[in-house]
Amino acid sequence: MRRRPQLVPWTAAGQTSERQANGDDVVRTTGWVFNNETGSELTLEQFVATGDSEVPSYLTVFGLRTPGADGRTNDDKTLVEIGCGIGRMTCAFTREYGTVVACDLDAGFLERCIESVGKFGKVDRLRTSHVTDGKTLDLPPNSADVTFSYITLQHCEADDALELTSEAVRITRPGGKVVLNYRARGAQDIVLLPLGAVARALFRVPKFGPRLSQRRWAARLGWQANRLQPDELIGPLSPLLADIEIWRNPKSKISGRGAVVQEFDGINRHHYWLIATVR
Ligand SMILES: C[S@@+](CC[C@H](N)C(=O)[O-])C[C@H]1O[C@@H](n2cnc3c(N)ncnc32)[C@H](O)[C@@H]1O
Image (cartoon, rainbow, N blue to C red; front, top):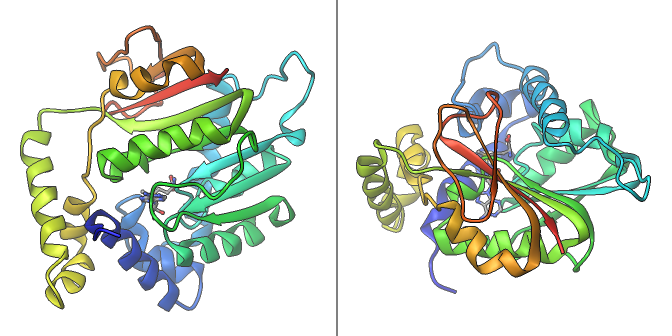
């Protein structure tokens, strides 16, 4: 397998998380991986509370709490989350969906995710799936009603993000939804993306690379891996999708061919969501 430096900051953070005694310490030491906050006063409970407030608002705004024509509610449905981390949003998902399959590149994060959901969610509804190669979901076709991903696909190399997008469609049953978050191109990317590529190249250097990847600034640069545009996602997948929507912040101008544009001011103005029904 070719070396995959874009995975380095995550596995480094995952290993750091494995060394911590408990979830509170994980948030204190690696919180920056997720929300840029650090500090000895932070707790896992506060961290999960940010997911508790985001999840219901996204599900409501995106129409994911309304029972479909078949009358099934979320209690009867399966949500797959790509890039669950230590379970910031997963806890809330297990309160909404009958089954939640949390997927991540890093096995250490998956362990922490189980722990977080055990404390703050419904762990009997949780399964995990390790994304060992960063691009393939080890899940069967038609196994999800909703496949969701937040602040993850922007951190993958473009090819991997495209592959994970196709994988999301593959595992979602006909009539189910993909709800996938990406980062749009911005002026700062002229500098940020090349610096990110340099950081990832340096992560390959023996001994120095692994140490560098533990540095906050280097990891933050290194995970700036792609800025896919909606047409790059929709183009190859359009025969497989219906009701394609691009959700954006009202200040954003991003759109996609054949997609209905929807706006919600709760969306980060650098982000957008691709939401579509699988045919
Ligand atoms: C910024 S965190 C977001 C976690 C969570 N979605 C949230 O909002 O708190 C990104 C997560 O995606 C995972 N990740 C990064 N690249 C991935 C890939 N190629 N496949 C699966 N997971 C990946 C990382 O390990 C990390 O846990």
